Image 1 (cartoon, rainbow, N blue to C red):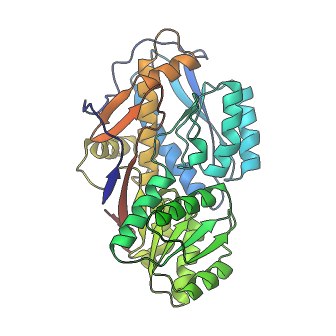
Image 2: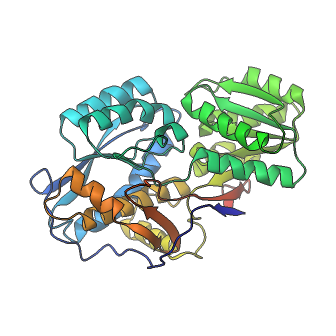
Image 3: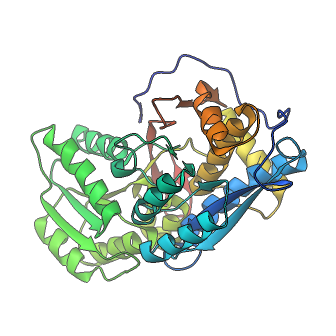
Length: 377
């Protein structure tokens, strides 16, 4: 099932990674991006996979001479998915005069970083989060590639209720990310005259889920919607199954689909995850074929999964913005270049940026884990 709320008027085909116009970067020979993300700890695979997918694209561009002979570089710092560390990393990156901030991982981390970016007038591009608090109100410096958590949870609730499953519980991370997902579920249910039958939390970077399992299993829900990272969600699923819960589990995309599948093994069979990227495991769309071919050509740079594909797509859009920037490559020129993208089809994946809309996509579809490490859409 797919929901795509934005209408698109152009279908120009995949944007090619060649033929860039001559522009100049802020550092001799380099366009330096700053990224603070989880590269260690329980959410590490999200940062690692997104970064590696982006670098597959940037390495391609650099091998062709870069953007006007300027090479793209990511200066990455590990925040362990902790807001305080992210805030300090962001201060360092801005002090180092990076050209733009790119590929931050998570809601609580992005929420402390975005105000710094706005104050310094540094573009904040492609955070790995669907929180509405980062999108509303609109801000000139923030560009989002993925659909929102409201989009994802609306599709999840629509799917569950269409199956007659109305007793829906929510297991969520006790921070801005989890609450954003909870708000999305609550909003979607309210539109149907329903509300969650139970709620329970887990702390960020924790797998202490025993109390949450007890609370939600006791409520007897038909399904549990999970708003967390892969380790805590996997721990909850194992605990709930052990406690005798026989319902279904739905997750939003931030969980990290392949990381969740790897954590669960055979216990992953039947677990559903909403996706904001086209399936990298299907050759139906040219963007997926392009991504898989690029990963193959890159050797061990990245694995093929949803998180790495999101990094690749985000990098492709950034490259397109750089290509379209006019005159000297300043931060304002990059913003103008991104806004000039308009409505396009990127290899069968609809994207759109404009001066009044900095959310590229509203694409959401559902996938299911098979229990042997694979993902089926």
